[in-house]
Image (cartoon, rainbow, N blue to C red; front, side, top):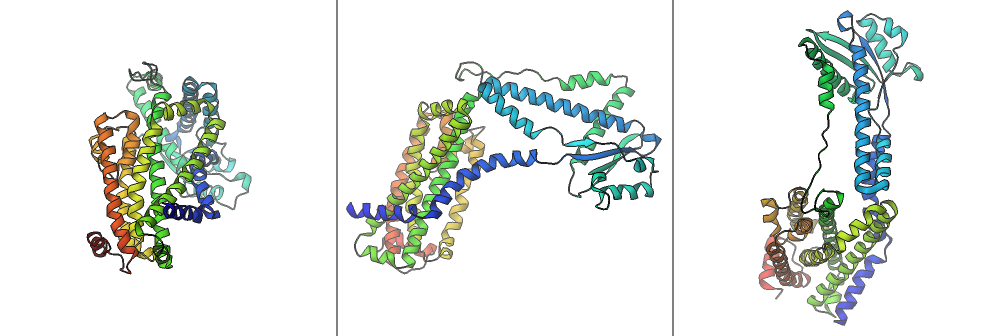
Length: 462
C-alpha cells in the first residue's frame, strides 16, 4: 500500500506542480464565461446600418413610406417583447433577475438599421445608369466618410407586386436584404387585404395578440405554476453530464500520456523493478483521480463564487437542488464508476504506446464512440425518458453521462439501481481486463495493434 501511495503522490505532483496544468485548469471556466458573453458582445457591438430608400418611378409610389412604417412597427414589437421578458424575469428571479434581463436586452438592442435621408443628387437622379453610378459612389470608398452609406434600396413593382434591388457596401452583409424582404411581404399582404375589403389594422392587431399562457404541473415546487426553479434540476443534470464527460476524459487522457511517456523514456521499467504492475497501475489511477478531484474543486469554487457574486437569487436554488435533490450523490457515484472504467482502459492503451501516433490506432475509434453521449445528452434536455436515451443509459460506457443528465427527471428506481450496478460491475471487469493488458504492455516492446492488444488480454502478460 505504501508503494501505491508513493506512486500516486508522484503522479499527482508531476502535473500539479506545473504552470501549464493550472493554466489549462482555469481555461475551461474562462472559455465557458467567454462562450456566454461573446455572442452578446458581438451582437451589441454590431454596427447600425445606414440605408436610403428610393422609389423607382411612379409605379412604386408609397413603397418607401410603407417600408419606414414597417421598420417603426418592428421596433415597437421588439420593445414590447423586451418588456415581456423583463416581466417574466422579475416574476421568476425577483428584482435582481429583472435588472439582469433588462441590462442584457438593452445591450442587444433592437433592429440595427436606420433609414436616413437620401442625398440630394441621388434623390434627383433618374432611374438607370446615372442613379446606379451614384449608388456605387456612395457605397464605395471614394465618397467622404460622412457621406458614405451602408445600403441603398431601390423599390419597384413587378406585375403589381412590390420588389426591390438592395445594394450593400459589403457583399456578405444581408441584414438590410432580409429586412426589406420581410417588409415587402408585409406590404403586399396589407395591399391584398385592402383590395379584398379587409381592414389591415384588424389583421395586424390580431397578429400582435399574445395570449397569456401559464404552465402548470402537479410536480412543480409549488404544486401549481411551473417556474424556473422547476426547470433548474434538468439544466443542472445536463450540465453535470457534460462536466463529468470533460473531467473523466481529461483525467483518462492524462493517464494515457503519462504511461506512454514513461514507457518511451524507460521510466516504467525502473518502476517495475521496485513495484508490481498492479501497484503501478493502481497508484497512477489514484494519483490522476486526485488530480481530477483538484480540477473539480477549483471549477466548483469558481462556479460557486460566480453564482453568489453575480446571481445571488439563483445560488440558493442551485444549492438546494444539488444538496436536497441528491444530485451530488449521483454525480459522485457516476464520477467514480466512469473514471474507473476509462482510466484503466486508457492506462492499458498507454502501456503499449511510445508515441502519440501509436495511440491513435485505438484512440480514434474510442473517441468517436465517446461522442455518442454528447449528442444524446442534448436530446435528454427535453425528453429524458425517450426510448433511445433509456436504452443507451444501460450501456456502461455511456451510463455515467446519460444517467447524470436524466437523474433530475426521477427515472424509475429499477433503472437507477440497474444502470449503476451494471456500471460498477463493468468497471470491475475493466480493472481486470485493463490490468492484464497493462501488465503485458509494460513488460514487452510489442507495438500497439488490435491483435497485440487482444493477445495481451488472453495471455495476461505471461
